[in-house]
Image 1: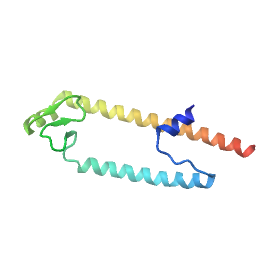
Image 2 (image 1 turned 90 degrees about the horizontal axis):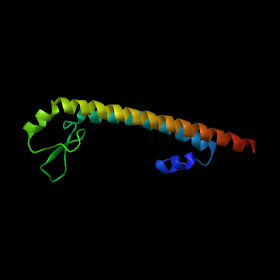
Image 3 (image 1 turned 90 degrees about the vertical axis):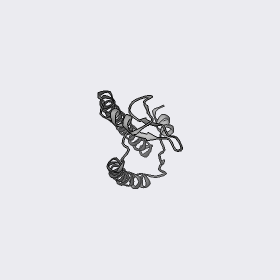
Image 4 (image 1 turned 180 degrees about the horizontal axis):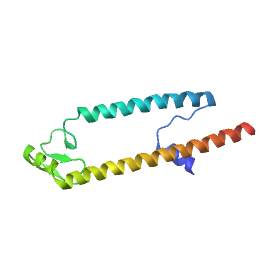
Length: 124
């Protein structure tokens, strides 16, 4: 059951052989480090931060605060310095860290199951 959930919940490459599996794991490590570097660059280059605007729309919204919209820059500045916004930013960051940790544990668990299956298949 977990194997099928893992397969359908993510975009993964299913290796045909053990050699292919080891090659893909090396590529994953490199791509993960590149993604982390890109994420840091995006955070540094993102001038809007948590405030986004839909294309062709004059109304801006806050990513962290549900349902919060703005019509002008003054209201955006006021909102960014508010306690409620800062609290929501911390909450969002904490939730993202928890979700990432859960994903990592799930992937580790699936890798262990895969290794057991491969080991069992070799013995048969």
